[in-house]
Length: 167
Image (cartoon, rainbow, N blue to C red):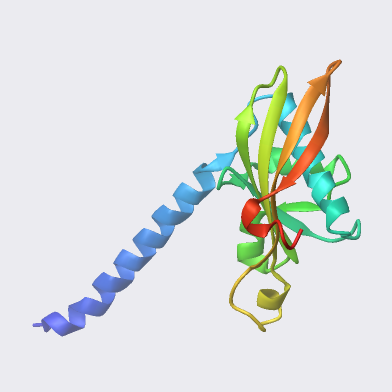
């Protein structure tokens, strides 16, 4: 007869495998997909503005998330076709392949007129090199976009008040 102690390891292993599998299913299902072409265009404009503002080279790999979710593969593909070297934030977690990460969140989206997008940029290079344990935030602010004659454009960028001294 087996002791209770000898049964603990297989039970814990089974629970871990089950939980990891369930977590993987949840994370795969929960991705951000734009509701329309306007959202994709807005995200593209904001990402391009961040590349420019941070003086990133065109070949710099940048991971991003939208609304706290990984972007759908279709969104990543659409943005890469617009000459943005972006990856899903999930890719960094798997491969440490991005030097920077952008967290985007719609503050207001009226696809007929205006949009506000909050953007937080983090530097992941120290983590990737094993020299740090935390993402270093570089920029934090809000983009105001407006649609005029059917085209979206960035009207203004407002640094967050907490970071306005460093912007």
